[in-house]
Length: 618
Image 1 (tube, rainbow, N blue to C red):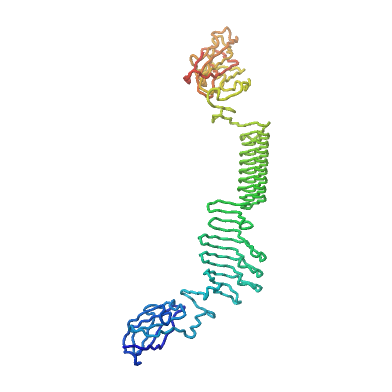
Image 2 (image 1 turned 120 degrees about the horizontal axis):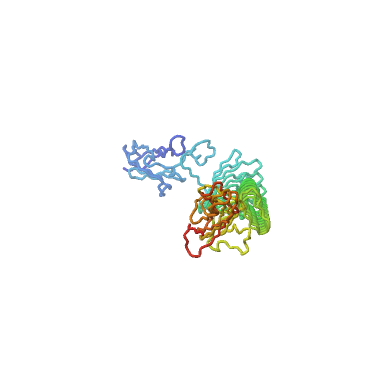
């Protein structure tokens, strides 16, 4: 059987588009009649029918095809739903011309049938006048001619002014532009952009925010206020521009830019970089740095903190509050109410410090004043360094003279220099050199021998001889009455000696023994000892006095002297002349020691090691 003709009875509209509920069916309803060579309907039955859509009436490229194996034919009539086997995507009809070719039981029926539009379906070419709708699928809008710049989709207000524009230029660069409302005087509404979102052909993306502009300016699209951009290398930046009035024309410049290189602040022009804050924390800048509620009236100053004033050129204040620098190149690290008035002067911190001398410095403390050039106060309280090159420290130290050095302890009294180039120390607890526990106002502990302390030959005056290390003495014009019947000796007089090294200490002592009040024996035992209230030590004591007296009213005087030698390490020692009344004295005996004295002399050994703690007497 040969099928010669196909009569198209009905071609339903392709059901694509937007629906509020459900998805769009991708099918076409198709109905036709099949006749044989004599024009009679083909026999009833089920036939295999193939449908193919081409882009040309002959030949061309197949855009879609499917085969339905059992299409029912009755008296030559059949009905088929194309897309029931292979869905008909909307892209099949993306071109202007489409042709349908049908094959029945392997026999192609020609010619192909061209797809045409129903009358109102022509309105699909434009959307003007549309009142509502929703697009839920993919929407593609392409310009008809890429050679014509400015192909765009524009959204306009009631006055016909563009408020939103989506455009693609001739090289494929795309942009979304938002426009600001314009008053009636503006003739260049399309140029008064508020926001651009653009992507170039190299993938560079930019978002530009424009400053509000009045209607007199014809270059609104160039007056950028804020720009976010990424270049073709993936480097992103945020740029802020200075505001411009309409008379400035094209002269707009960036003031701040943030990039991967850091935060950059610009001066009058973009080439005049004022400050760069790098990602590694480096701050590189020109000009001044001012933070907090501060003043920086000087040139090239740097101020931090609160209510500080950097008035001197090239001066700086690191922090604190109510600090003032008036000297050129002066510095205050911080603190409260400090004043650096001298050129090149420095105050580290503290409170109420005043530096007026050039190149003078105060480290800190409170209430210190340095008026001398090149003077120094490291800290402390209420110190003054008024002399040039002077130094004062501690409490109420006053270095009033040039080159003077004054250190004072916490005693509540001024300690004042009296001449140039003095070195004065007030230390109530003593000055120790080589020792942590000075035993006098000055205690020097060093190596043995003459190298410990060196003095000129005439350095020691006669009134000082008893106080020198290595020799000491004591003498008293008093009368010491001995206690009769005592079992221990009592102190008569003492002396303290400091020796610089181990060696011998030779002690001598004595006085006048006075006896009276008895006709019997009246004697006393006298010795030198370290221990207090010690007992008599043989052979170190001496006996003073005699046996029976001729009368209790007779007074007798006897000279008494004793001596003893100790071996000691370097250090300070106290020795005493002590005496004890003879327990065998007669009743009523009175025993006195008059004008006692004691002397200690140090002799370093020249013969090597000696036995420490031993003593000798004669």
